[in-house]
Image 1 (tube, rainbow, N blue to C red):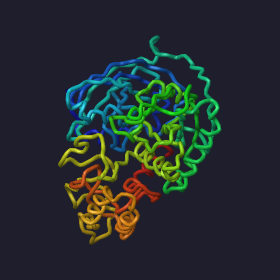
Image 2 (image 1 turned 90 degrees about the vertical axis):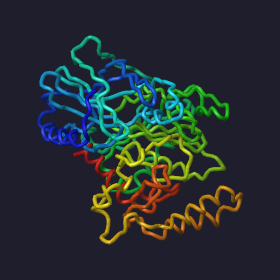
Image 3 (image 1 turned 90 degrees about the horizontal axis):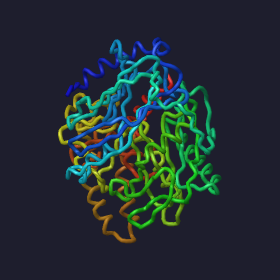
Image 4 (image 1 turned 120 degrees about the vertical axis):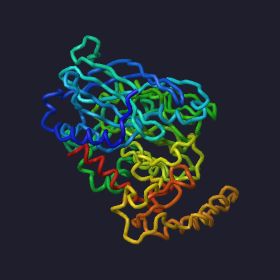
Length: 465
């Protein structure tokens, strides 16, 4: 099995990226190639098997930056010219399978199979697709290789006529030069079409009210597709609720009640193919607090309303989860129950742009944003905050005074004061976040911290420049 160091990969990627601007038309058409495959295994084993290769609509991504230089995600898909071996395209991403591998079920050796997709510009000549995944030390290993002839009779070229309308919510120009966000609805019936469009409008307005999306609004297109479901709502297994919802979103994903994902990848991709997209957001018609976000895969957010949950919570969830799926941002909180076991291995620097293990304080990844003289780690009153958090669990109805004191700790230090604040990535100790407060840390209407803003801007730039 071939292993590639992170440094060697990115040297190759940066070199290749300088060539692709002028070579795109020589290697690719204006269409999209979609490769579907099955991913099977446990926490320590992986098997890939090809499902299908499809011709889809116009390629929505950049035609001048075809090589991934962000260094995010657990997986790396590379497309090479079969004859010369030249790297033509690459993309990094996470998947549900990658997260499931850290659960107790996978660690117990119980195998599962999940459906996954890689998309890239449709090639003019045969190419070799290589998919690599990171090991526990974040080094990439090649896991799957296949050769694809674009002229093969086995490529599915039919145009699917699905009875779902594409609504243009925001348009600023050519998909190849913009970030194309596609919002899909799940658990909405035909009679709930207006409700869906109202929810779409509510969420996109919130997204573009937050920096840096507010300042970069002209770089985005937003479209919406209501994938009409036979029944209203989505599955909630712990409550014994089962719905016939088209995209298959469900509460209790990975056995965590508020985590909402779908394993119906082919259904999602078939419907999404009706419009150009760089990022998929799924909003589901259910009132229970929940959502999820997987880098370069999709995000989910609840859209229903209830008397028990403040309406602004869903707006927070939408932006927070989009931060995960669009920019690869990690969760900065550390006190919630999660479905992972050692999601971030001890002593290994996370690839997430807003998390660090602080293994090398002199060269912390956001060093250029830290004011001289800032201590690393950066003190922030963590012991008191943790004590208040524990008290909150047994406080009963009178929670407001405790919450107010916790808020005062977070607001005592300006969000702009970048440092290394311990407590992040589900770990109370050993992982650090760049700011005392951020939408990736607080369940509140707060901004992205400067480091997260920078990470989001980097992703936008790769799609529009």
